[in-house]
Structure formats: C-alpha cells, structure tokens
Image 1 (cartoon, helix red, strand yellow):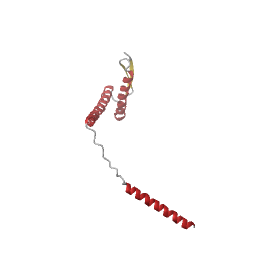
Image 2 (cartoon, helix red, strand yellow; image 1 turned 60 degrees about the horizontal axis):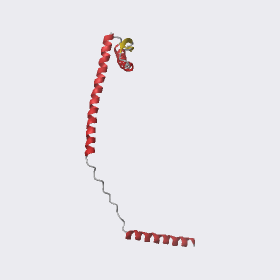
Image 3 (spheres, helix red, strand yellow; image 1 turned 60 degrees about the vertical axis):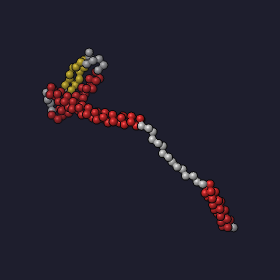
Length: 131
C-alpha cells in the first residue's frame, strides 16, 4: 500500500492508499486544501482538527448542493426521455397539403400574344426614332 504525503492548510500528512489511487488522493487533498485556505484567509490560524473539520463540512455542504442540482437535472432528463419516447410512439403527422395553382392554357397563350405585340410595338418605335 503506497504512502503519500499530502499538504492541507500548509501542514503535511502521511496517508496510505490503494495502489493506483494516488492521483485521486492528491485531487481530494487539493480540494480539502483549497477549503482550508479559504478558512485560513477568513479566520486565521486554527487548530488542525478544527481546520480539517470545518474544511470537511464546507466540502460536504458543496457536495450536498451539487447532489441537489443533480437530482433536479435527472428529473428533467427523465421527463425529456419520457416525452421523447411518447413522440417516438406517436403516429407521424399528416403531411401538409400544398396546392399549386394551375395556369390555364388560354391565359398562357394570351400572355404570349401580348408579349409579341409589345415587342412589335417596341420595334416599330425604334424604327421611327432611328429613321
């Protein structure tokens, strides 16, 4: 079992941990050290046991708040999953019907005649202006 020295509140502590767990122990110790630093800055030097107790309580409070948030998020996720499952089970919506107007052939022919007349008039005007 490896022996690791961790620093909390400027004090060194020798602790044992399982093989391969050293990085987790250092991460946890850093969290505790960060909390003890906050206490130290606010209150000043205090007995080791009190510092560790207060730091642990601060971390426990933060952990409880995070657990509460996780419960809320899990509840929302559960609602969304149920809604998604309901939508997956629902029949597909009817497609929107789109009506495209059909232009009668007579209108198309009349427009073509009007365009031809307009072009003829334009050509006649151009000849008169040029001549």
